[in-house]
Image (cartoon, rainbow, N blue to C red; front, side, top):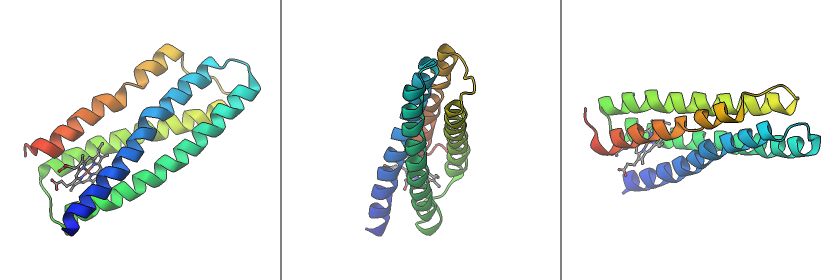
Length: 139
Ligand code: HEM
């Protein structure tokens, strides 16, 4: 019972974090397209900074609940290690996006919108194998 509640809240916080993982890069594209409009840039940078902070909190709680499932409820296996590797890459992508947003707020140049659109596909490429590992537990 406690296991299922922990899993339910793990998934809830994972969904919340993933919402930020998918949306933060969209704000970055909008910043790259905002050109020299300081008011638009400032508003987007503020939205981005808030979403980034919210995402960190959601990730932190999802991580704690994931660790509880793994270590306390003993849902372990090689798949957890593979999953954690991919989650670490997703977190690195999230942090890189957040840093770009902070830099863009100071007027620093960003990669082209086309390059950023490709960068935005990375979380999708990572989430499919993560879910595959969780559901198929191949090892
Ligand atoms: C942050 C570190 C994480 C750890 C240590 C972790 C660990 C775990 C563990 C041990 C389970 C239990 C699996 C089971 O009982 O069958 C689980 C469930 C789950 N995890 Fe994570 N997880 C983490 C992050 C994530 C992320 C980032 C995602 C998605 C992108 C995710 C998606 C899921 C899903 C969907 C389930 C539920 C599977 C089901 O319905 O049975 N987890 N996690």
